[in-house]
Image (cartoon, rainbow, N blue to C red; front, side):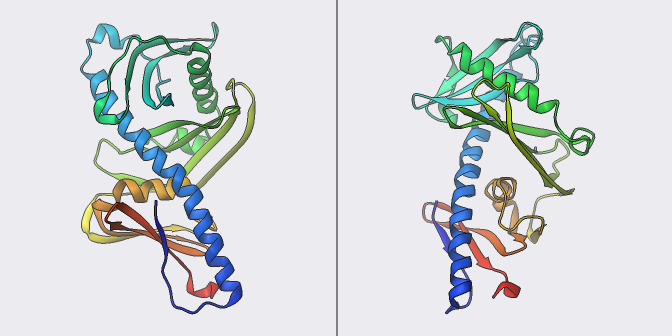
Length: 260
């Protein structure tokens, strides 16, 4: 994804250094957020297929559903993790090279890998702060494997059934490859806020708890930039928005005036 730095020129040396760091951070975090949007598309389309299944089959579902990528294919798994037996029973499995090409799959799966992902979701959910679990909001979780030895689980506000878009909180957990040992966890909660889509509105998301936009901030930008006239994420150091380029959305980041 292309990134641009907007702002007055020229910059002093210190400001130029901050600008370079900002671009690096937005690029790094933006890559994760962009991957999560692709994950989200697979989840949306595959969940529609699950909803269409008979209730007798859907009774086999638990809350441990997730998306994975292996050998150039996207996989969506829906099933139930049994903590006592430490097993994951797959009710539905879809696979395809992209979200629109997903089909029901009966190919053998790597049960160790799949069970580890389900285990990581189960263990992460039990560690969610009460401010998240008691907020009365629909949350989405995303499972990512940044390295062969680690599993990340992100929790972000979902699209609410009421049509409200929510921002202001996110949590992430990093596990070993088995999903048993917690290596790191982070969460931020500026306060959940909701707004209905309105293309006449410029939405400013205050994120002064961060120096640079978070995964949740950039995921919201990529997911909903078409729903508003403009979205600005304002952190302590920078302001980031999205414009539409010839190849899709482009992040535009500028150093805040008081940092110049």
